[in-house]
Image (cartoon, rainbow, N blue to C red; front, side):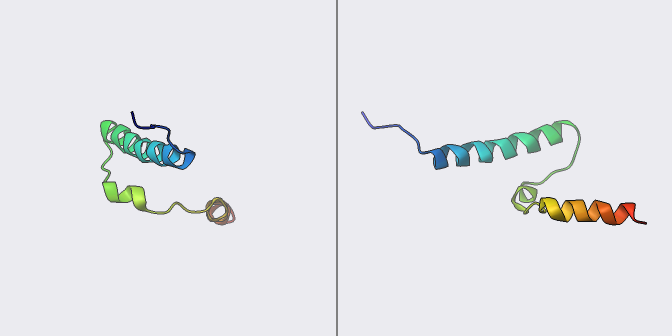
Length: 59
């Protein structure tokens, strides 16, 4: 019988992959048009998002 213990890195990778696919599926159910390529786009940093919205407020 093979040892089936998984490393923490493998578990995190597995759940990250399925969390993304589940999120895209839920968006499709809500009527949004999503492609699989959108899941590989890097997200902006927290600081970049804060600066973007601060710039909008200063107008």
